[in-house]
Amino acid sequence: MRLTPNFYRDRVCLNVLAGSKENASAVYEAAEGHVLVGVLSKNYPDVVSAVADMRDYASRIDNALSLGLGAGDPNQSAMVSAIARELQPQHVNQVFTGVGASRALLGQGETVVNGLVSPAGTPGWVKISTGPLSHAAPDGIVPVETAIALLKDMGGSSIKYFPMGGLACRDEYQAVAQACARHDFWLEPTGGIDLDNFADILRIALEAGVSKVIPHIYSSIIDSASGETRPEDVRRLLTITREWVG
Image (cartoon, rainbow, N blue to C red):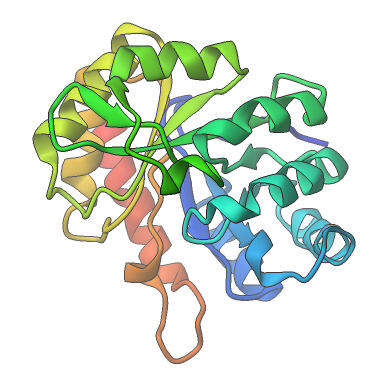
């Protein structure tokens, strides 16, 4: 079972949602395997049912499963860790304070475990109070270098930078990308990314020197009628990726 994502040229791996198991297979094929397919823990009543259903998803896409919280919901943190232990997916989405638990329960260092940090309004600083209790407390704002060091301490692989609002916080995003490059940490830009701004968001990370980038492209490429991600849009994202990575 493959535990590491299939990065294009060892640099970029897309992250999109699946509206069904058939949709998961279709977007995986459209991305030629350079994708992590998101399935949300919030859509299941308990760990047992989630594990059973997500295992079927994973079997169709060479385990390229991205285990999601559900809109960054901190209350899903413990459930995600419990599911991750059983499934051993390639990718786990976590709030900042949930990273250590997920890594410990996984029992291995290959699965990508991100930690959710948010824009703080000032370049070079990020909000790390994204956990079940801390999200309701006064904002915990620290230098991005400190956030990266803390995530490394907990066994994290990457920063999930959310919500970006597309390029609404360009300067802050650029500072995060530069810090990730300096400290050899991966970056997952998330929130408001679409076919129009994807190239610019990817370019900023690549030109900063980030070693691996996992951009999350969600609602903008989901068909509103079917609730499924459009494979043709995923193909377009792969084309843009090729143009910038080479």
